[in-house]
Image 1: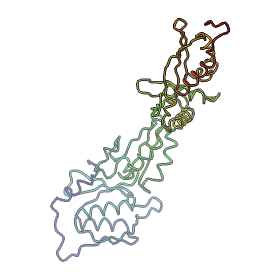
Image 2: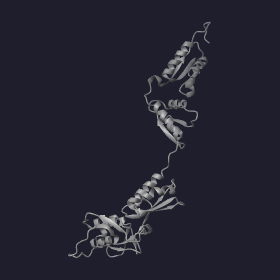
Image 3: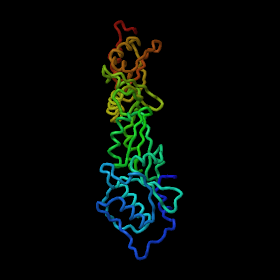
Image 4: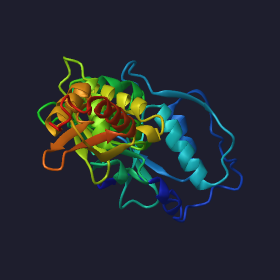
Length: 346
């Protein structure tokens, strides 16, 4: 006997078969059930829709009591065959039964299964995309990071009571979930959420920071001055894009980026824009002038924000730094570039 899954989209086609009309004198039964045995549901479906059923053994019995499954259901009278068929599936679901279409039979005929039989006969799919149009299926979920033993308990409470089932395969890190399509989608979402890698403070990461209000090299020097003794992050400058790359532990990189945002929160003051200028000497030697400036700007030179050099032949000092620093350097040179005793240049 060929059993296939019933796609919801094919219900109308299944009901297009010619059915013998009910007796004109016989009133159509209504889907009103109050603690009624499941056989009443099957009788209603046979008379109102014309479908047939196949089942084996004790499928119609409640496994807990050994008595016929019972159901209470009250619905507005469905008018069309597709509406009645969908209602039938819903009532069977409440009874803990799943209906599979039987191929090669005259008219719609369904094989009824309880949970274990439904799982054995369901079509197995490997992705949620394959569930489109399906009524009941078995979905294979393979986990890459999360342990299947920890994910399975999160999924089980979301499955259809008395019908849904879940098998765990530890060797292949996978699960097979059998249930109605809407419940399988929920199971998939739970598994994917659990399989996402958790972020840890000691993860090694690389993050970029684009400087807006200044030169990236100066920002690098600034954050180096803020480095704590316990921090091990590294910073690299991309001059072409005025970009800083920070690498290191996730928590440390986060701190560095926060510092950069604070430093970069205001536009650069024109007085502190980078410039390179020469200072002409008259009496002071370039070597002495450079020594004086290096002592003045010791911290800035160490951080790389100031550079000083001298040209003996031209009696000049080259200063690279901010406009503010340049004015300080000129003032210091002027104060020291005095005519020596004896009136001769050094």
